[in-house]
Image (cartoon, rainbow, N blue to C red; front, side, top):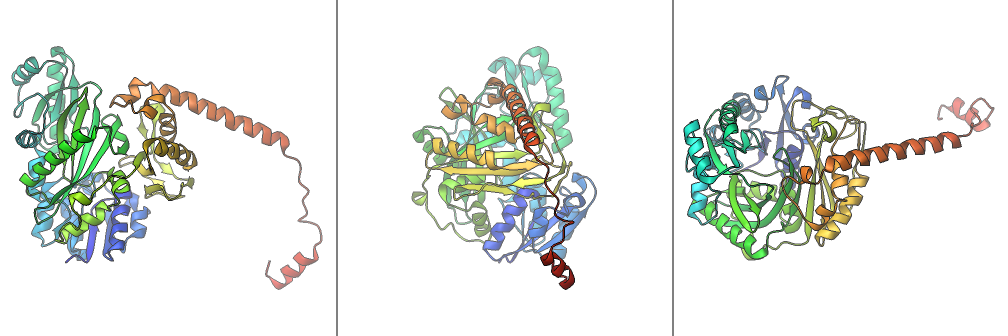
Length: 493
């Protein structure tokens, strides 16, 4: 039985899990490094334990330290969130060894899906199309050249046990192959502890679509529709939507085969299958065995609280809905609000939030851990919030997006808010002409600089008008006033 949950994460996702715990009357336990001591997730939790002032590796990635806090806090279960240790089978295994519940799929499933070669073989087995490429690990230049010659350039080299866009490089010719292979192997070893890589055919400017699914401990697996996650920068998603632009018959076919894949694994808890889609051809990419940043758009169109369902499954409860009861209603769009400078190669920003205005309304949601005077640290991912809107259709969702993005105001640090404001006004975005190279293809950063010049000019013009209209105001504070004098005497002023 789960009575308390330790969230082995920080920021926005920690706040999200804490809110789900409150709905179920569960005690929430936060962890934090010194830079995060004032984060909203620490303030909202029922208990909080410090991890120290050291690096990420010594805090949120420090398995022994986290296990010690799990034991000391008497937590019944652990939610890993996304990122950090969410796909670390060793961490999940150690949590279970302690007699605690890991809120996610089993360590064996995490291990299996962490190996992209194995995942592709299983996808092929259940009938999901996969990209042409190597059938196993590529360990040498000679092996890489054989694969590249067979499938043709461009190719993409990927860390087999990688994720998050790291350890990936597109290679356009044989001349680039040797250096790219060595670079990917080096990054893979540094960040994932394994240097194995695979090679796939690279698709120029595809769409990125996903199928969300959930399984329980009783063999039930259900899909919750699809998402469009195509607008990205450096392999990192910026805007996500539900549903995607996939034809409905193709979406349902992919969803059914994704559920079959999950049943083959005896999958329990939430997961996401990713696909690349271009020119009516679609290919399986990978399965993420965790909650996704963009899970919120699925919640908006299905009405299902995915984090609450994670807690239910971890409590050994069967899913209380069937596939036939799932329907996708309307259209939801999520905008990732990052502390970064789009005009300076998306350089991460840190500093104090001096001003914050959050949009509201029945169809608008802002998930975040920031507040006025909060100091954004420099050591972590730049995500500081997610703006989500819902409309009866995509056109209405975009219209609401414009108003919500205009109303959302964050001062004190640079963010990518203006970038989103520019994107939603482009013809390509409005008509759904999307691709993973959307930012470079549409030269959006040029439009952004023009937008910001116009905004600066408008502010300067407003300042001039206000400056010229200000008239001296008579100071009455020194004049005698019986009401004020009486208040002073009675000390009530």
